[in-house]
Length: 334
Image (cartoon, rainbow, N blue to C red; front, top):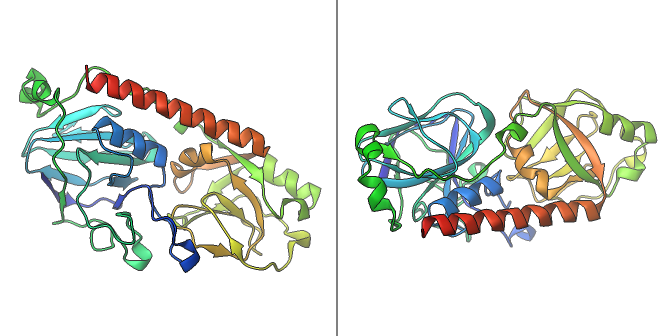
């Protein structure tokens, strides 16, 4: 199966779960910004968790399908359409050959994950198909998609697809989807300011009490220079106080750093492997998908929680995802 890129969109890249086990060599993990949405999209088309999909950011591409293709869309709602007809998200969708998938405005969030049945067929680089643009690793020639590229996916049809392909909707509209879908709370993606929970970092206690209060009570804005490497926050300038110069240490997805200018930085999927700024917090893993769906100009506030609370949140999220996966499997095999 192939799909031709007619228009690339703002930033459309191939991503999977990431490139792990190499950070001690200075190789960033990369991978999907919203791994939760990626996993749901993959499961909806019967893929394994490790399958590669497209991460579509803010302004989506236009894709023309060269064959009937099973896809799924999850994550932010960027108004997907086939020939100007709205395409449902969070369910499997059969698209007919010759049809074009396009995107409109950001209705909720800013990143959509487009999974193809079987996964995207690109060569793994250092154990991952994820694109790391800064070093030209993975994906399609280590870069974002451009017009003229062809997305090749491995065929992986599911039994009920024949019924969808022969349905009236497929013949009339050029695509078809089952009636069931995964329930996703889009309203949480639209909350502004977004609430992001974090655990106090290694240097949190070195901040003056008033500065800690500023951080948890103030409203921040995602700066225009933010990208997959890190979100630069604006709105509240913090004094680093006694933190001073520190030795460079390992950092993670969600590490909150405080540089000398007082504007916090939250490290994201393409983060560097070590950093020398004070680490004042670590975003709770369960809230990383919410953080990943914020775009420049969006606002957020931070809430400090305990490590035990963060562990309970990520456990609950994992349980919910398992329940979603079980319901998808039941529906696919019904």
